[in-house]
Every structure is written in structure tokens, then in C-alpha cells.
Amino acid sequence: MRLRMMLVAGARPNFMKVAPIWHAAQRRNDIDVILVHTGQHYDPNMSDVFFTELGLPRPDEFLGVGSGTHAEQTAKVMLAFEPVLHKHEPDVVVVVGDVNSTLACALVAVKLGIRVAHVEAGLRSEDRSMPEEINRVATDAISDYLFTSSRDADANLLREGIPAERIFFVGNVMVDTLLAHREQAIQKSTILNRLGMGEGEYAVMTLHRPSNVDSEDALQRMVEIILLTQQRLPVVFPLHPRTRTRLGERVEHLTNAGVTLTEPLGYLDFLRLMCSARVVLTDSGGIQEETTVLGIPCLTLRENTERPVTLTQGTNHLVGTKPEHVISVLDWVLSQEASKRYTVPEGWDGYAAQRIVEILMRLLQ
Ligand code: UD1
Image (tube, rainbow, N blue to C red; front, side, top):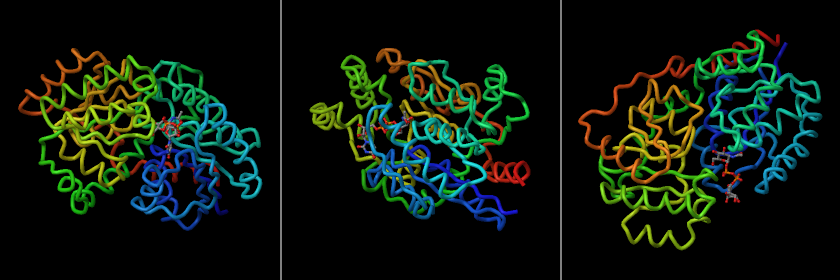
């Protein structure tokens, strides 16, 4: 029997997780893959560039939902996704990560009696004010197959009462993509020349979490952190659309202080930039994992993380958002001759997607 697998992507951090699963399925001759893009992210530099660089085809279905409140966005994805399921009748729907599209599609599929697999299941920040935490908890509760990227995720799921036979530790699909593209990024990307940055001489900054950019106070603290960092080494700051809007006139202020602001970067350029950074400051989830694999020190500007393995084994430091504390850790990191000792977590080896596809074939055939 051929397996009909529907693979769903919606927002930027989904594309690098979906890509290796699509490629692993394509390498077999017993799976038909139907690729769905919900259109949660739609700007060319938040979406198209990732499809091109990661070798993904045009999606079979593009739902074009765009932006909106959480309710609007989630509801629009649900309404648009239901007829797509009726049309294609997949055996399994694979959702990844923790964005609104992840939960919306899982919910629609499960109610139509279609099996749902959640990739990157079980991560928990234990902070329910984060929209992603709600998406994670809810998606995991209704999914049939939970594919985890770290052992702590297995423990979280078991604690929430998920039966052990639904949980499969497979490793990290995002790392599959990173390892598959690292050499290409180093060979091909011209980003360092374009920005005039030298190896190991700059910091990379990314910010987009509502808790860091939506309130005036929080944003002011972030601006202070950026300016204090820039006094120590040049800062490259690719701006997420949300952050650019919130910063408003402060964009000019940062530029005048010497900060290099860019549009959101494509996958290869951003990977290249991380590879040679002295340090990365971020509130992203995925970047905490990518820097751990690359061995680049990372300062996470949050009070919690759903990825504790990057702290215990990796190069990540959870530093909160108080400028004095962030900068004291930054100074400590910059003063070290070598970066923090680290080991790459189990299963972050480039084969996670292959393991997922093999398990699904075994379960569903
Ligand atoms: C979403 C995810 C978040 C992920 C992030 C990565 C949820 C709840 N959040 O947050 O987990 O880390 O993506 O970027 O799903 N916009 C554009 N162009 C685009 C996309 C968005 O201009 O292509 C603007 C929107 O108009 C909106 C803002 O950016 O004002 C935020 O977009 P939205 O999709 O609501 O969530 P993100 O903050 O990107």
C-alpha cells in the first residue's frame, strides 16, 4: 500500500522542519506526499526563499490565510484546511513545531478521523502566556503520534498522561536541515562581504516574541541591550516584520548608533551569519538549538526555555531581559578564550526525518 502523507507548513520556523521530512519521503517509492502551506507567513523573505533554498517544490495546496489575531488566524486556517483534507483524503497529517497553523491543522484532521503526527512534540516552557505553549500542549493532547527531539520532551508527555506507545524519540529535524546545508552556506553565501563583517567579530541579534517587542517597557529594554552590545562589538540585527513595526522611529536611532539592520534573511545567509558569529542574542526557539549544534555561544533573552537541553548540554545561556544582567553575561562570554564546553544532544545527527518516515510506514502500512 502507498502511504498518503500530508505535510503542513505555515510559518518561517516550520519550513526547515518540513523540508527534511519531504526529502526523506521522496527518497522512498511507497509514499505520496501532499505539501500544504497555510500562508501564515507570506512575505517572500519569510517564506518563498526557504522553499527555494531548501529544495521544496511549490506547495500542492496554498491556503493564503495571512495575518490576523490569534483567533482569526487559527480559524482561517481551520476553515481553509478542511476542504483540502476532503479533497486529498490523506492517511496521516504531519504537523511540525508550535505555530498557530500547527494546532489549527491538527484539530481539523483529528476531528475528521485522520491520524495526526506531531513533530517536535513535548517541548514545554511551562509559560502559558506564550501562544506557542498553548499550541504545543493542545496539539500534543490530540495527536496520535508524538515525535520528540529530546528526552525531556518524552518525560513531559508522559507526565501529561500521554501513553508511552504514542511517543517516539527521533531527534531533531531542524538539525537535519542545518547539517545538510552548512557547507553550502559557507561556500555560497556572500552575506559577510555584503555586510562588511569579519569572522568571529560580530554579534547576531534576533527578536520577535510578543513579550519582548509588544510593550513599550520591554522594547525599551531590548533597545538598551542592543546599544550596549554594539558598544562591545558590531551587531547584525535582521528585523522580523513585527519587530520593525514596533521599533518605528527607533530603527533610525539604532542605525545611527552603528547597528547593522537588515531585512529578514534567507536560510543560507542566516546560517552563514551564525556560523561565524562571536555570539548570538535571541528570543527565538530554533536559534537556541542551531547555535548549540554550531558551538556558538547563545544568550536567550527570555525567562524560560522549552529547550532545556541547549542549556544543560549546549552553548545556550538563559539570561532574561534585564540589560545589566544580560550585559554582564555577555561580557563574561566575550572574555572567555574558548566558548562554553558543549556536546551535541542525542539524535541531533541529520537522520531524524528518516527515522520519522520509517516509523510512520511501520505504523500505518
Ligand atoms: C509566528 C509564530 C512564532 C514563530 C514566528 C517566527 C505563532 C503563534 N507564532 O509568530 O511561534 O516563532 O512566527 O517568525 O504562530 N508579517 C508580515 N509578513 C509575513 C508574516 C507576518 O509582515 O510574512 C507580520 C504580520 O502582519 C504580523 C506580524 O508580522 O503583524 C506577526 O506575524 P504572525 O504570523 O502573527 O506571528 P509571528 O510573530 O511571526
